[in-house]
Image (cartoon, rainbow, N blue to C red; front, side):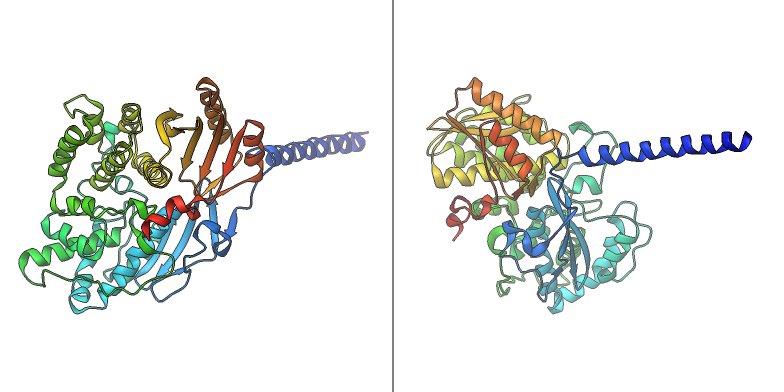
Length: 444
């Protein structure tokens, strides 16, 4: 009897365990993406949005296996001086350009001298790094061993406080602890077409070293790598998401003005050019005082607003300023800057936007044909609960504003499940829009 009782208990336990496993498998299959769960990786060569970018050349090699961390891709890039983990197509384009410049500059006599001296500076970069070797070309491996990645923003590298509202963020003026963003640093960065406020720790360390040496007069005060050989697919995308975002006048302003002075000039420009006050407490002042933006992002936001206000004004700018002024992290600041860049580029080409509409803290616009349009700088859009919620929000906005049609554009790919959900909500999806003439023709 005891034997059969033991068998019965073991059988009951087995049945319960099997049922638990079955339930877990069912939950695993249905959770997340509504049954349209994509692979966790894709091939680099399969990403249509960057089909013109070379994945292998003398400057860098991009690993063919690309991780999906929706709404972005994670790329592994290997350069002669180190390895990078880069999140998003936009950052990949910029980092590829930065790698190219580092390698070209290292090949010069003064570049080799500055690069060798940058090793000491790299010790201060990379929160949590356990060991930074003296030779800079090995430092990326040290970052990786320490569990550090190439961050998307200076704010993540040098966080002043752990909490996340804007007041607790990191002022991105400095470009890192002990980083001297002075006249020499800005001039050197401008000569090579680099962002002096770049989030790339190697770029920061190199600019710092050159600035110090130039200030002491130990190396020449001009480089001018105008001989840089072209890399397929980069073009002007290195410093911004679209060629339209590249503006020589704005770059000159960034180079000539220190961060505090730059913000003052921008405040005056808002008043003179756009008729918007920059007095304390105003939307402009709140935006300019938000430390989650780098000075370069602040300057480009003004440039985008100016292009959206003249010669043909898109109304509702104050509502956009309200949203942009409230961002609470460098990631959010980068996202909205990229989005405004896309909207500005679109308007340059189409000239049909009439007013802004803000939904779920994302900026959309109505065209003169009553079409509601949102353009999002996402590498990939999946059928997630967050995206479904956003879809519901723009559907409501379209109905309340009597929109005749609604379009949602993405810089990258879109899952079939989300396309179907959008179609049932009356929203048309467009993917890989960086290939559209709106975002390429003006830069040629």
